[in-house]
Length: 530
View (spheres, rainbow, N blue to C red):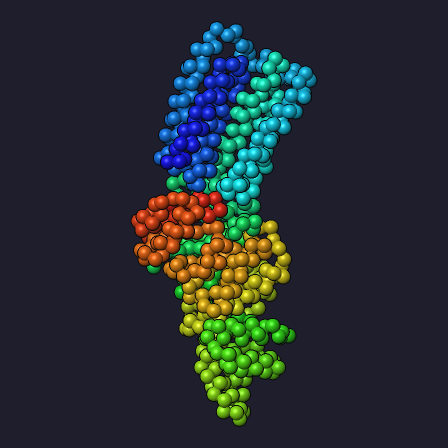
């Protein structure tokens, strides 16, 4: 209940300021500033809650907060008005008020400038507090045009008799900005959004309104979706794929079960009819070593096998080969010509693995970098027909590598313009695939690349992936190990203590959106008809 004490202190301070203002300041000035002051008090209350409780004010608390503020305002006003009954009446004529304001421009220019400076310093201090407490990453209020207008108007409202009267209007107009940001955070579900790009997700709804996801290259634009079988992971991924495409972003889907082939506007590539380009033309030595490393890690080859595979790959390149079929043919040829028994044994141990790759990745090589450069940026790779987990891992890894090379050549980007969606990512997380995926999570934001991965096995994801992700969708889970890890992640960063019960109580097509950067936790529903 520490935040309750802090909020009570805020209300007491509000009552003190209100009492002094009503009992001393002119009535016309109070009438002008009262709406902004009352609304600003509510916003300040909500902002204080965010700072201390590390989450937006719950809907159940908001009416209580507003009610308590209104009660305190009425009681304080009643007491303060008694004190000013004997005071001389102030004018409430609008023309007279405006005349005073414009007279102040010439007679009190020094005080106006001082007031403006004080207002901007106050807002800067609020921004600094929000950044230091990690509620937001960058300043928010100082960049808002409302604060400039509010500061100017409040500075003009200085009475020649008492320059100290600037305190109330300045604080009042500054509070309008607090209210404005608070309303945006509750209506658009992007807590104090300072990101360069937010995407409205059609088909994803909450009690707070439309759901928007921040995909900001200044933070981490990646998304992790976790849920048990039948919880709605694929449905959510399809919704994201449609929404991203509608926003004009490129989307590439690695589909392990053939569930995305009906996506409108996407080029569907059957992995059994195509193959990734494992070797460019002309061939490069680093690519040879990269190929050997990928095969070695996935099949967990020994040192002697890796050494022999390197020789086979180099010979393939020398002969002009560029596919797994070429690699197999070279290995079989070297096996038939080998005279050393040990070499024959090592090559013989490699042949079953190479046959798996040559059998299941046998289609026409595609140049994905060239396709992306030509404007083909909505692609689904249907992996369901590959027929081998090992071949699927190699295929997916080389798709990722081609996308990565394309984005690096493009150079750095200010906004996310390409998204990779990997459904059931645990199917490819082994060896170099996981290592390369971790690298993309760490470095891709500067190239405008976002990754969306879904998995049943959140507890097995590496810490690199989790630490470099801001947006999480947690759907229904019953496995205690998974629930414990999710609970540890959210409660460790947000302080909420009811996450485990929420995750267990979710129904299919229900989930929790957690935005780590802001601490926002929101229950959402997935529209399966979208």
